[in-house]
Length: 516
Image 1 (spheres, rainbow, N blue to C red):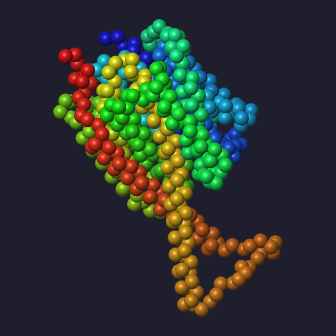
Image 2 (cartoon, rainbow, N blue to C red):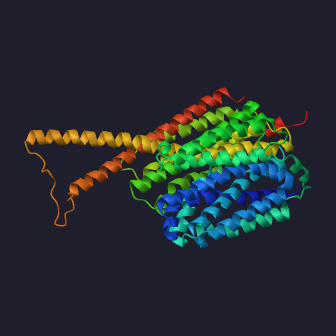
Image 3 (cartoon, one colour):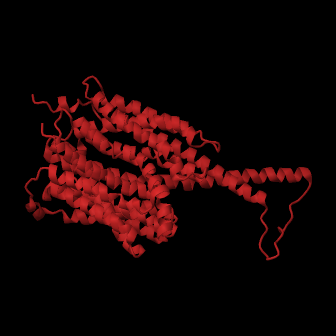
């Protein structure tokens, strides 16, 4: 067997890891990056927002362009763009240059991720396809969990610039492997005669408006902001027009007709929901430890490193398990979702006394459950791809939904914070006020009013009041974090219902694609 294609797949995997690190590691280390570059919090939010907007566009257009320029040439271009845009960010002269480079970085990252699935579907035979899907699954489970460890290494030990400079060795190795090991096809430039330029334009406008609205809406107070209202209107018009255009275009960017296949529709919907749920395994615990316990990434990374390490064992194990004819992928998915649900419910009982140690057991359930969900999902959806020519179209739909899910996940977490924080804060302060008034009535002593002033005319705030304010903020964060875990658990229940109703049973690829 020729092993060169396997090395080529390894090169694309390294490139995909690099693009995921550009996204996840930058998000975790954003406070340090903002401080080093002198960027305010509001300006820093655009560093994440612009990346995700460009990533959605890149994931949608990359499969169409790789069929035109060939897989090898397009992969090398995406790797080069990823490396160049990342390396220049620490040396940018102003915030505008950072925004422009971040857009290019997101576009390159979005281009690379679909190439991994396309390469796996193209070069791997049905007998080993499941192991290729396990390689792709690393980008959805392993790399996001590993990101906190990498962020801790760069931000707390080496230096914040390496958040971006890490791409130099990774992209170099990826480019060499792809250059020497990936077969060169004949380009098909005649496809430009049927270029879906309307779809591309509507995609940039609609996806950019939607993702920006989801990321910036909470900060700008949603529909009390004129910008958010305009973005909502633009996305409400552009996205339906995009779907209509893609349905009737003879050579579309997104082949929506594939959603008529039940298992493929489940793959798109399931991956979208899974990406949102998987926030419970990384973002939410880290946020709690940072806000309540004051942890740095270096102190909190072990709870997500547990998930990352187990993926290296669980993903190949799931590929081996699903290769047996008697194993129903839907049952495996239900068991995995049950473990994720148990993790969410268990984590919802957190208190002010919880630290890193209390999360280990529940993170273990996440680490086992996530690959049991993602591997059956990928197998059921890719088994519907009847020919290699459909591979890029399948990759475009699956990965575009995944990119949109990242923006939707950020929106959901912000919405829960806003909604539940206000509710818990009002209740705690109201209850404290009632208890204080009962004490005053029982003692017959009224508080001094107006409150005493210091010599400089400033209001004197007693230390006890400062401690009370801190305790309220701490308790509000704990209660809203608990609610977040419960809501993510509800999404796991929703996905369990989808698994039981939408997909149909399918055989392992070695049997499904066997010649009659």
